[in-house]
Image (tube, rainbow, N blue to C red; front, side, top):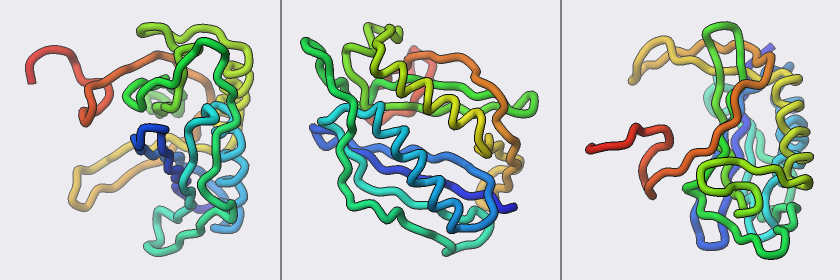
Length: 189
């Protein structure tokens, strides 16, 4: 079995772009490409209709140049209909979903492309349509062959270990200043 990186590229209505990477274990690049398209359908169900997926690719992490691109025609619009009175939020707001792997490993995903119907201040609120799609995505990631990646040695020749994600961790909300990483502590920098 090989380890693959599934990469998705997104664009907001005001031209803010971001990417999401998932690590997945499978037999070959063809099966990784099938998983790429399967997860894309789950992810676009959480993405508002004003946001779009502009690309997706699967790549073998151990073989340089072994890449397969999705067969979908891009851009693909999200399918989550924004409720009346809600507005799309900037890409600097994210739901932080943690997945537990072999202790003490875990993986964090920053889901952007949200609306004010899902996020109020710094907390996630219940919204039935979004929550149904969110729970389907969480179940697929925790129940599939997805992996948590952990860096063992620093760059420039970093090495990584991969361990299967087995359960959901916490669900948080994070916001950041434009151009800054998520999870920075507040205060002077």
